[in-house]
Amino acid sequence: MPARQTPLLALDERDRKLAGHLLAEFLDDHERNLPDVARIVPDVDRDVLTGLLQEPFPEQGIGVERLFRKVSDEILPNSTAVAHPRFLAYVQGPPNGIAPYAEAIAAAINQNCNFWQLSPAASVIERSVISWLAGLFRYPGTAGGILTSGGSIATLNALTTALHDRRPDFRRTGLQDARPPLVLYTSKEAHRCVEKAAAILGLGLDNVRQIPTDADYRMRVDALKAAIQADRAAGLEPFCVVATTGTVTSGSIDPVEAIADVCRDERLWLHIDGAYGALFVLSDRKREAFSACARADSIALDPHKLLFAPLEAGCLIVRDSEKLRAAFAVHSSYLTVNDDPLMLDFMNYGPQLSRSFKALKVWAALQTFGTETFRKAIDHTLALAQYLAERIQAEPHLRLIAPVPLTAVCFRINNASDADHTALLATLASEGTALLGPASLNGRKGIRACITNYRTTREDIDLIVNRLAHHARTAEPSLPG
Image (cartoon, rainbow, N blue to C red; front, side, top):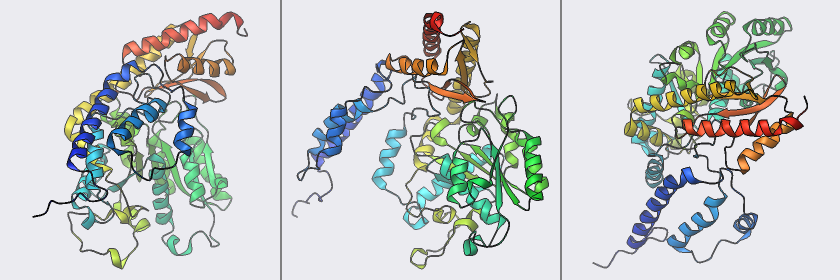
């Protein structure tokens, strides 16, 4: 028999072995070098990036070895070190150790997770992940959901479902009729994805009520009730409340139990934006704080945060999966296959047809490390946040500006201006101490550290606080008194 030719876009045996070796070497070097990265935010080489933007793609390929060299020499040095233990500016943790390998497998088998015939095992894996996540919140057997790109799309899909549930003829009529405008309620501390979703769905930002918060930055239930009553009196139609379990700035947890009572009495859909905080339910010390989430109609959460999956991996869970299906299912004769009770056609539970195998990296990590390891990792971040808060409280030049219910720690330097805080953030980043973020709460500017990084240690916290205290002491004589 003649030798089999290598297909045009496949690697031959030699290049496969070389690519595997170089990839393993890259991942190993990346892991080993993380603690020694001098700059979390790179000193961007603009000439290199300009070259990457402007250089034409080659007519003849550069090959595997030169590709990896290009990645190591040009891309990696100009990338933010998000896995660094002192990357604490955002709610974004490092990927878990098995994730790159799971992603490679998903890319190799390239399952299209829209209808089950294209992805039978993937369909079951995604169902398994969603069932486990729903069980964390004690949802009933009717629950279902779908993995998404993140919490923003999960919230958009949830509000789409709530809209269809309120107006079952929405698919036919849209919002182009004479019925009263629908009104959505959320906290003034809520993530902007709620407003974005309202704008995309045509609800209009004028019909989004930002409810005031209490001293701990939680939605005020009395203000929510008053707003609903005022809108009904004005001839409008309240339809949904979005509560937040872990606001993006301070990590505050809205009083879900009381809000659920309001939604029950007023016949409103209750959605929980738990993109940051919901998966703290895994922690024994925080589980009770999330018990009322069981009453919500839908929950958005992000495995690419506290399950440390690589981007993208969000999730929407809906108490009644048939309502999710009613919002998104569309019959297409060319996609029809026989129903199978073991499988699910996920194209009927969200807006996408073509979908990647996102569930594999979540499933693989839970299989590899076990759920107990994730509980320990989450408890580790909670303990470090409390330690950071204690260190700040012990420093005479620093003060907390919000409670620390989860892992976001917001603070100020005494007598420092807003410009001083901005300048200090830049200094900490440029000297390689840490990447922290700005905070704004009730008009007060400050600094925010959010510990969602299983690599962070007490030594990292000590280094950060010691540098903060040093800068504050050094700058104090020149600061306004």
